[in-house]
Length: 492
Image (cartoon, rainbow, N blue to C red; front, top):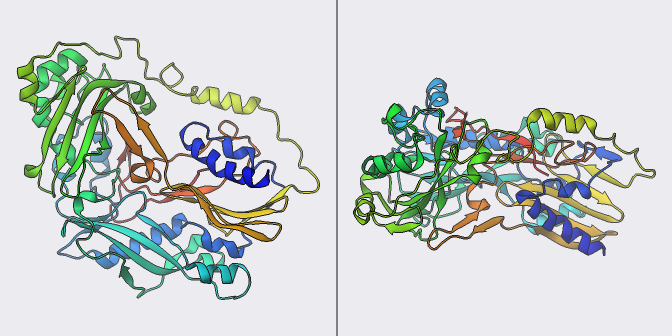
């Protein structure tokens, strides 16, 4: 049964990402021995800490940023915080020019800055004590180059800090090489990783909303802020009927020649309760195909409206004159506020009361059931439990990974890890969503598990590194385009 339990640990973590965040805590509760600064040899497998991630990002930006070519850690350029904050609440028109690519280079994607794994032979020699030479730590960095219209991957390092049991003091040695792992042009610009800050496609929304304005207002109400319809003002947005938020999804029809987004329109009442929008999808969608960085080469097509279509353009939709429909969430009984039927969970106050009402943790067992060990400031932990041992870490793009898995001293596997987290949504034909988290959201849309709610109060947590590039992350402003906002979060 023991091997099955270990496999269950990995598989349960996969389901935890979607629906059961407390699942892993069933395996790691009531810690009796927890040493987070012993620096076990297996820590060479640990993913990059936030400090390492920031150090690498800064090193690459400093090395590649020139007067001729701007280099950033995000697609989004430098914007005053006041302007960015107001943009989240419907004043995007003045910022649209800044949303264009402008041909700059930036670090992007769920794998923006990740661990470049050590060579297996050297890693095993060190872990098994055959050699005392600790493999150096390196990072793999993904750079989208708007200047060359391609994507490059680089190996950067060595990174110092974790080797001295001080991941929080990570630095990249001065003069360290930035070694290309791919050849220029081998990965096309249209195949670039998705950046949560990438909003350039929205600059051509007027090609749809201008001709369809009367129809959209009649069908969905005055919920089109400047975020989706710049410049329309109070004619399109009352502030009392919620907000339409366009969500771009990777479309399966994308190729190396053109990047295709399927844009779905979702409704939310306010920016404090964004969860509601996933239950309120408006019956209106379209596709945007982008080629290069010039919007003149982009097109909007494949429009669907109230179950009809697709239509190749807004004009074609109007000419077809499909039956009208009315879909106004507030009039249909939507709340959009935390604690009501369309927001998962309870109000924050109720969460707090629930946590306070939970029984105290059970007394620790004797002798200790398991032990944890890690590096100071690191993410992962060496877990030892009833003859089993493995190093658990959290990868930014694919989630949980267990390394150097042994049972009673015998190595069972070098690595057991997830390779993808995916959700395939059905549709009425041509509007399905194939949502691959490794391509879009894994390290860009993470949040902490709540102790006492998602997991028992006494559970032990594994931390992950979230890549928070400066952006309007669902209404929350982050503004340092030359420095990553990477930070720790309780991932499992």
